[in-house]
Image 1: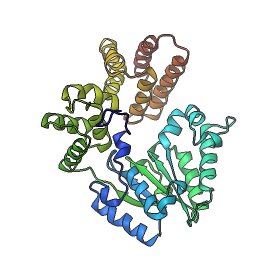
Image 2: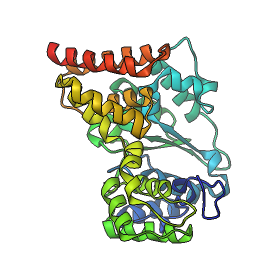
Image 3: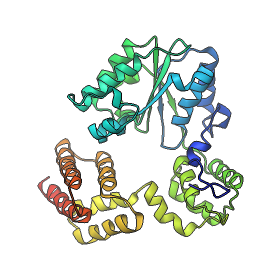
Image 4: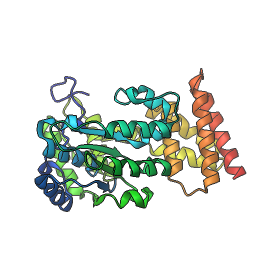
Length: 346
């Protein structure tokens, strides 16, 4: 990405990540409670819940900074549950931070238990405990959550856990009962808009009213998405181009994947292929990215366990076929018809 001077720069999501409670947007109640935790140095296990892009990950880092000072990075580890349980072995093998714990002889669940025990058992640096932050905790299977409950109990004195989720109902009661719940609310539109305008000004870009409205509408209250869109549509001309936003927004938050999945399940192959063309040619998604997004969409659909299992099997087979495919489009078109068959059999 290019900054105000045209040189490669940080992603703005990371560059402007809050370093203190004062810098976190909104969340007045949560900030007071977390400040008390930092002041007393008495950290319970925490469950952050609320919509995406409201500051849950940033708050976890700020807590670590407040408790551990300059040693916070050595006492803070972040894991994304969806990466582990949706990408599985492929992610664990490629992850620079987790590969050293990975055992290729074990399945994903056993590797998760192994990794959690190893990370939780690391001695804190100059502090009574360390923090293990698990983002998108709703992606943890029930067996994984049961294992996590036992790990939380085992390492309670030397490791504190912070879980973040947009769907707290997916967290089993034994885990929830061991955490202090903190609700992150949707950010007010005017708060987000003021922040985006300030960042645009600091980066030397003009943010028109039209572009502001477009970003706010497409981000759907997710500050992380809004800031990413703002960076994507700004360039050295110091002008933001709202006409580019629809394609860029889909790249960041692919709505078309949901449409593709629905059309395929409705056996509307003609329109499904048109959406597939848009995702591949205009949005620029890869076949793997499309299938990964389909898997996420499938888990959020109201399906019976049998129907969901059949759907996930078809998506898994398609993902495997892509590994040796010479033409992604052929495999994705075959997936459209396979999904229609699943819908008919269900």
